[in-house]
Image 1: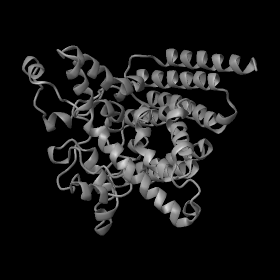
Image 2 (image 1 turned 90 degrees about the vertical axis):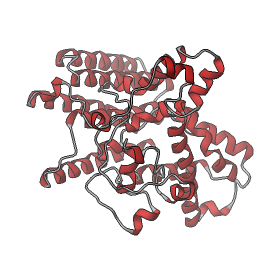
Image 3 (image 1 turned 135 degrees about the horizontal axis):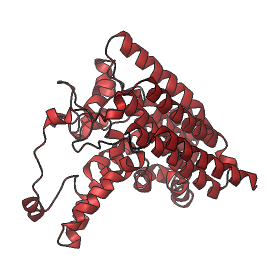
Image 4 (image 1 turned 180 degrees about the vertical axis):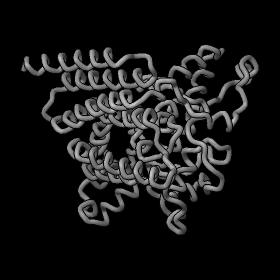
Length: 380
């Protein structure tokens, strides 16, 4: 599976390049270098952390499948229609996971990474969350109980994930009947928008019929404003993952009881007991303010900045691709080391984009990381 992802990386980059070129040709560019690199960095981190959290990615599913599967040897899973059923089942389970990711604060803290970009393009599709697997595996256990084999479960998940790549674009309009059945660019633009009428709508990954069935569908009518209602305003990839957890921890300090702290985690994002809201009222949401783009001064520098940022990302991407390709032959302790080294390099890129770290210091971080990796493998 890791090799499939490694092969897919250049394909995704080529499609991003095509969308970028099309946008320039149509004089409607939907990309910004700093934002795109930030989103792509999160995509790399999600794959890196997946390699060291296999227990939650697939391990617990396999355990339940072996112990409690009702139809573990059903021939249906070997037929082509069995594969179709597995994909539909995965999409159904994913709908509820996705919905929980918006309706429970602790799960939103994991899922929010995917929504932090103020742009909507193919790079946003790759801005995948890293922490959702620690809780999300529970939502797929019905498939294990039904006897969907682990390898088919993984392939179904990959199919649903890859499908969602193309729906992250502003260059494809409404598609008529297709929009009524499938998740489409129009439907998914709504999902990423912070406009009042679009909040918490259109969760379907491949099929939007789940949203129509369970009352969470909204049609795209007015222009979408993307991002989150509490903007991240940072290119720091580590902070992007931890920011919402930190906000929850700070909010928990104002709670007067442990039951309220528990409710804070379980209830919808932004929930507070009445006394907390009275002491610290939440500001009213302003859509115009949400549309203001995060634009630190470094983003306005010239070609040297662009080349340096792209070179740094290319180095981290190449390291990740090689790591994915050889992942099965790398020991767990070295996997953790490689994951930490590449994340450190991506942190350096984020700091460079924010003008908090110069190119020289970013290179030093890279050299230290390469030295650590080299010494580790020389000792084999």
